Length: 415
Length: 107
Image 1 (cartoon, helix red, strand yellow):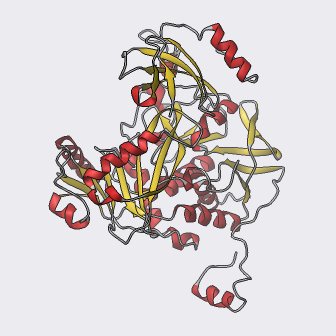
Image 2 (cartoon, rainbow over the protein chains, first blue to last red):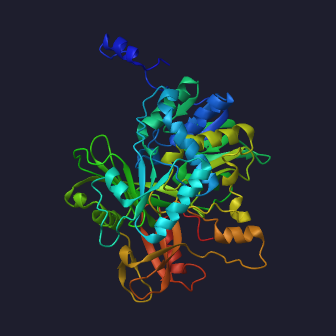
Image 3 (spheres, rainbow over the protein chains, first blue to last red):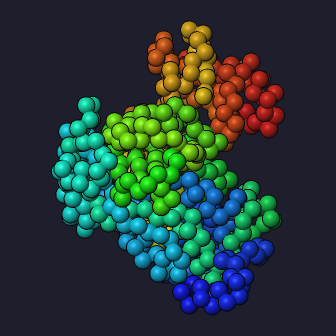
């Protein structure tokens, strides 16, 4: 892999930029691997990357049904934050956020991480109490957050209407080190780094079955033939239930649609991410000038990657009181992704009833921000066969034991 | 927009008039059951990509719960039936089988 740098840019300019090599190779699958990851989205690629970087396992294939980063990695609102209440969530999301800070350097790929700060508005007294509690919890967890006054909110984001008749802004939980990143670049950067370590990224290859012998996984049947493996990591978000069925068990997961939308591009007007959980909407401005807006999930099982229009209407209606200036903004496009919602709305990074078969799923509506931390914890689990400190609380057995992570990490509310 | 016919009042109800209730025909386990049975009842879900039976409530209409058969991969609605049913009516199952020959059947 040739390093990207300003010198490389200058060197390639001499040959009219015709000499750039492909960022990753697209080989045919080998007969078997030490580890196979199903799903080349952010979480799957990050898992593969940390398997190689942290554990020296590089005889790895990453199998993808569609194209790389074409699922929820390409369909989210790119928000990164770690201001969670419960210790297990705060730990893994803060790990992820801290890895985002150095990701461009680690991967030698500009992921455009922008720590512009995340404001979570408190618009009811209940929320004020909730966020004060979160701020105290975060102080103990080592996550830098602060509860700020309405005046400070107005200062941070002048386009906010803090005196709304129904939902005045009573304060906000401010995480100055949160922000956004370029979602595609995260997938592409990991893919390039994985390919450079000798891993095979196999796109357009759908898994049709999971083969096992003696209670241990032996490989996967795919549209490109059988691929043998010693260890299988399934990181397929919305389709986790399908893969679990192939592997012979059920998961506490339901797949529903979550939508987002962007407006026409306008001049820079807000340089922070604002989340308004009471009215159920969140907004930030992309580098292109579009207002990136997200809301709540649909309420029924759905695999179609499109949601119901009335949710878009509800989200915009809710945001207009808080952001009056968007009332005459035209919306440019809208899309949906299939999110995997668990019983307690927290993710699953876990061993399964099938030996050497591991699942990383259930990130629901909050997966993008977790990508590096999730990959780190999943790689640890796959390499050692037992969960490390980051993944320990996220085992699937918690549903049987009643040991829930009571946090709407992946709830149908704003993320 | 999803439109379901309420089997009680006969109204063709828009999604905005309904509340979703997720998977139907869950077998209820309570006190005295094993941990596994209780977990299955509480959390394990079929979540199929295809034919799905689910609960809906005509929240802004007659207020009653009913059941619906839908395809989660195409959003096609096969039909609705009363919540008191132990299984989908045979006529509805036949209709689904005609539309989806590879459907494994109600289990």
